[in-house]
Each structure stands twice: as structure tokens, then as C-alpha cells.
Image (cartoon, rainbow, N blue to C red):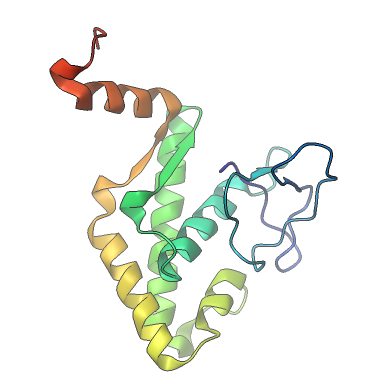
Length: 166
């Protein structure tokens, strides 16, 4: 999943296009509050429009809503600096959402993901917080890397089963 931008207006990305599977369909507008994507989805946006924020928001939603654990996700980008920034942003999003679920009165009103995650009954809020806490506890093991780093991890994990020199 490659992703689009965070908007200056709530929920709407500035220059996004969602390209659903199947060629020939026109791109659709992206909104972080829409149902989570399934299958293969490509979101694209211009530089500086908030792609990193949106990736963090999507990871936070997938985890909090119980769709996937952090260990089940692969989050990749191109450069090492971008990889480090992405790791920091994903962690910051998880922390902000966990804090908001712990004390909804202190939740930031300008974060549409937090607002969305709080829009449920208290029992579901507790489950979402628990999922976020588990993700934060295992964050060091999350695969948030460059494409090259990920490929290197896969080759290294093969050990002697791999027939390629690492």
C-alpha cells in the first residue's frame, strides 16, 4: 500500500487519487475517514502533501480497529532518511491515538483519525487502546524500512536456505 496526502481541510487529501484494482476505472478521491482499503490499493500524491502522515494514520487505524497487528504489516519507503522519518511518524501516531483513547477529554480535535477512533462505545475504545498498547510494546520489531532494507532482511532470514550471497 502506497499512500496519499493529509489535507489542509479535515479528512481530504490535497492531490490524491485512489486507483482501485482493475484498469480503466477513474481514480477516486481519498479520505482518511473512509473504510480501510482492502486488497491492493495505490494512493498517490504530490511531494509535500502529507503521505507520511497518512501512512501513519492508516497503520494506526489498521491496528486500533483490529484489522491487522503491527507485526503483520510491511511499511516501506525509498530512502533511509524517509524510512527513519516514517518510523518516527508511525510511532507518534500510535502514541497520540493511545493517549486519546486513555483520556478522551484530552484528545486533539484537529486529528480526524483520533476523532474516528473515539467514535465508538467505551468497550470498543478499551479494545482499541489495548491493541495500540500492544503495537507500541512490540514497535521495535515492526518492519518499517526501505525496500532495500526489507529485501536484505528477507535474504538474511533465509540463512543457508537462501541460494544467494547476502
